[in-house]
Image: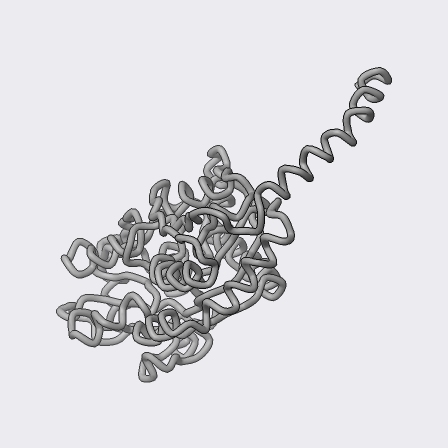
Length: 329
């Protein structure tokens, strides 16, 4: 930019600021219209479980409709995540997503693909759920224990199919962490989300699945599935008799599937404050707490600053795991 252009831009700046100020006043207090909450997976998975009761609570608290938009595709949630990243930073397009948010850009780089989005495009608003994943198999499967499963997998390398929400999604990374530690090779069958992967297990398309307690509890209680191990650091209340991988000797196998609400990084501070305040109320709402507790996934709320630190630490651990896993299909 030359000196003349610079002076022209400087002269126009006060007018631009006035226009922006008047526009902001004309828009009024947030929100003034319908809010869309993108869930980058089909219905039935952990992100969808988190989004629907929270959207209902936010609708009541904010006084405007909050529509859940299941926008699956791209494997692991990349299409929906990218759509939210590109949306205008005005608070009317939010994202309820999972821990795979940080993993997918690294997977794109690993395969020399165009990166769909960057984590830096998002601002964490609140964590809603945080559960260890559980290893589930059909109730009719021959494996009664994790050791049974490992022994059989060693006899039949690459023959036992397991489902996931897509390459390098939460369910895929968890299973590959376990397989690598156990020294076994499994057959990866990616689906368009955790809900379809769960259906794949129920119909026999796959024989194993890593999933959150909230999506498995009813199936286990109904006798349709069996769980063999827990990826968490300790046992959980909804499955108190289920051992952890660490208890069973897999010291480096630990994985949590969390769900959280995000907005765009450029979101105006007053809108972020309004959303944070609304989420602090939403996670205490009966329609949220009752739904989560019934699913065996109690609220695990974190406000934005704490959630941001959590995301940074968890993402570093997951990215290290992805690099260790390397290229897998």
